[in-house]
Image 1 (spheres, rainbow, N blue to C red):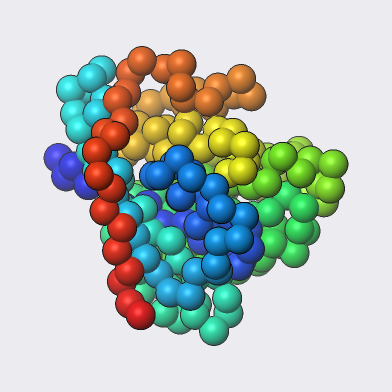
Image 2 (cartoon, rainbow, N blue to C red; image 1 turned 120 degrees about the vertical axis):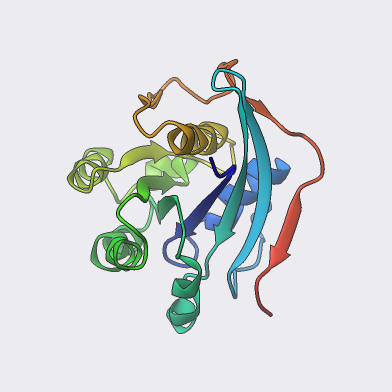
Length: 203
């Protein structure tokens, strides 16, 4: 079995894709982080003792601005997991997922690609413009899992990527996706804390 799981994150600029990746890979959050201007990727290794397997997550951060979209789609090929990220305080970012990003990924990946819908910036729930129930309904309609995350407060970030890796190893596995889970209490995985590789694919 291929031990590399390619994950691509898509969504409008400002939804928090880069912050989500930075939090998971480097356990770092920088609210002044610059908008991604071109696709880049980093790698993180996770060991799953239950399955007796270690896999590398190759996580691709794609540019959300319209002028870069034709470039970004070149990097969708071969993705095992497609993560659709919207900002819960920005209705337009959610509408873009439904009207553009999901279709874009669906058309440029194969039939086995697994989709995850992520509502980011859950720490700003008081400014919520997208109701959780509406997001879950859309996720169900495209057979995707749904997560509410906060890169700032490190809420459900680890769980998100650990479950993506688990789904790659065992497509029929049941998700542990629930409101109380953050992945940290699960002893069925070990995240490699060694040096992480981050590369720009262009620029």
